[in-house]
Length: 368
Image (cartoon, rainbow, N blue to C red; front, side):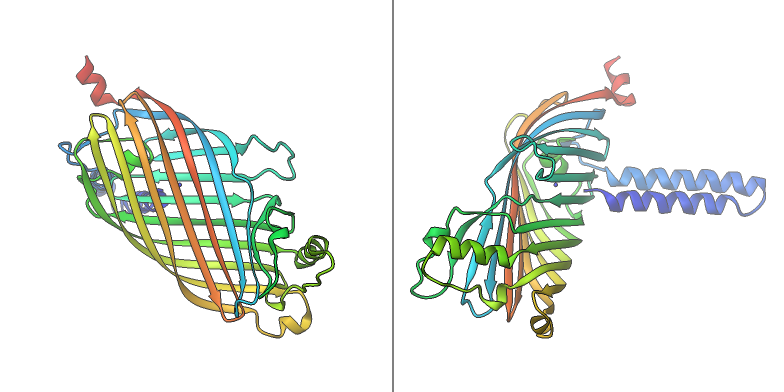
């Protein structure tokens, strides 16, 4: 995973300036135009204000980058009483994609190279908007149906090792949402230097962060396929799937408030090692479609507060024109209810190389 709130502020500023300009006579309109334009410029510059003793600003308007990504996705499903649990995860896959940046906006698309079947391709789409003060992430993820059972517990005195590593196509998941966060020490700490490579951190520094977010999660589960798999692998031993796992789909609406700390360590010229941890208090509202009418009447609805988290770690080498590096991003989402609980941990390891071009006007003048 950066910039939606910034765009909204700019749109509101433009609207206020033009709305004021339309009221009054010609002279008043011209004065208001000039005043609104200067105020808009002040707000825009404020988003990117930095202390150049600590941060070297971006010298270019445009960026192109090629990124290779290894992703990991794990779902753990568990009955409320702990009678049974299942952990599913696909094999780690390799994705490749181009990215393009213009000032604050950085967007790209990655596609899976190891599986070219269009019905099973995993998709990930990101829109990122960065400034010194505010960041935002807009994301869209859809998994395939190529999960494998990594761990299984079917009850006491039951050996479920025969299920481990077994392919299971009855699980599909997706997530759509956004995060917006504010960086308090934005003048001296550069989050973009670590994760969008648009600036260079010259002196080690840290900052507290706070944000809000929303995600919509979908989980489709074929419990009948799971039962067939258990019957086939366990052979003569009959083990029924617990009713707590007998659902067809669950949809999560997640509203969260987050806070955390980030630090950029400049251990050598042009080198940066970065890390940040954020914990989120998440209010989750969900509804599940149970497998039978009797189970549906058991009220498979839940509204609950849980603690989620996100960690970001990066290593960057940046020479203004060229840059290269690697980053690891890990999310964890927890959901608990007396009858059912799930944990989703997903993340990515990115390796990238990029090129900045289109020198900004003031730097062209300095060069001349």
